[in-house]
Image 1 (cartoon, one colour):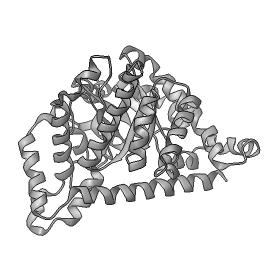
Image 2: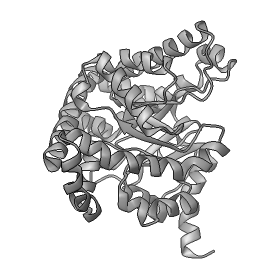
Image 3: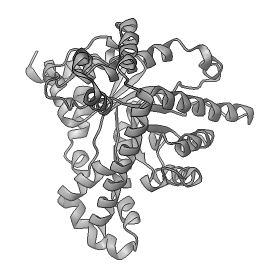
Length: 359
């Protein structure tokens, strides 16, 4: 076996265990160069996510985007419209690359995520309207609209699922948020059933952020709890996955052909240099889940990652970790609320920078 096929098999082994690897990146060059197509073919990458920061970096560095700006400035008076004129064709092109996988998987893989405007994070009606508009503008069944897990965003989730639109619920940092997201998803499906509408091929993922939780928790741990460093987020993820696998409440929807809302692990690039660089891939592998990875983490796993069904390991130990954190005064719900606010601020700033770049 040559070096390429040996390294590629590491990522394909993850797919063989039932988990999808999505690339946490999207740009025109990634598509035009053939790199995304190669990752799909060679490594089994099964989807893509994007956000304002990703597009800001792409537009700032890619000459193809800059060359298009003079004509866009003449055609669109508003920077946000210019951004969508630049980005949505790339989303459509990525959707088209994944279309064969989407079809072959029966609508369970091959998704490309694009986010509603961050300024709508606390505006339920505005989020719903933007999601409906973007879904129609992209015009691909394997598009997925990203909505933040704010109170307004969770309310919007119910409406957008009821409208039959795929949703990636982002910025989930706590079990409380996750429970609210799952409940809203089911309310949307229940309303469709009540209206005698199909619940088939309406995909949704609940994106739990990993490394940011560990970074926040580790900063608060006292010296006596040093053994808990880097363990909070994985423990919370394993408990969430155990509850997902043992939840019989979705069976009524499954009977009508609905797909469960899969757990997605986001923010899986390691921030602590003392940790193994593929920790948040290796320790979070399980069937019917997604891991979104940045380019560097994808490359690292190709080189030395090891695939195993790690999410089902040591669930009792994971619960014990969460209990120990509580004894040390670590309130994960409070930390989650703080991280949600910080995440919203970060995306709002990235979006503002993006619009300034296109002004």
